[in-house]
Length: 170
Ligand SMILES: [Zn+2]
Ligand SMILES: [Zn+2]
Image (cartoon, rainbow, N blue to C red; front, top):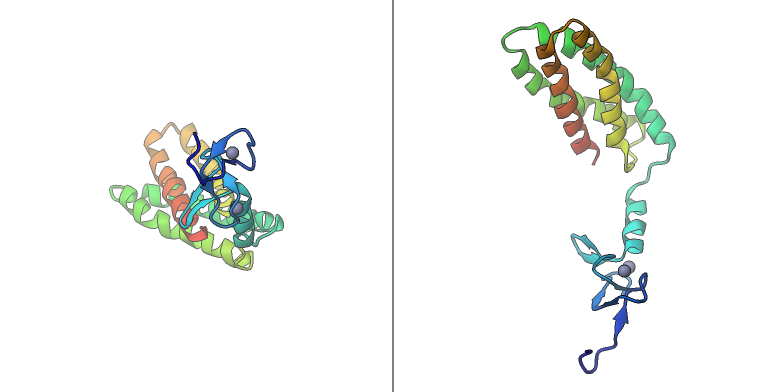
């Protein structure tokens, strides 16, 4: 039943789905399945995409640049964490905890500058992949030596480093 005075709306993407929601930007009727909750209210998927495209100004080449910058830095960080930090001894885990976020932030900063401060949706994903790929050879060496505890420090680098990088590149 439709209350008097109200026009029956149907989702603009699903003409069979009645709804009372409207996109608060363009006014298109949207069903709850299509509605995207944003900090400023419900929006239709088209408006959300338009908004994001304006936000992300980077091109595909930026991912290449990010990889070229982040991979060697990740290799260096992986080497230092595996062969220097992990061998400090008693405090190596603590030092890894303290050192991984700034190292991740530094890699992100280098990437951010290299791409000319343009935002891209998957920039932090590229850094994460580079961190994993950069640390992997050292993890393999540690595994070959049978020292499972030696995985903790490079693991901390990947998790905390990529977290800090993601926060920086958001
Ligand atoms: Zn809209
Ligand atoms: Zn819909």
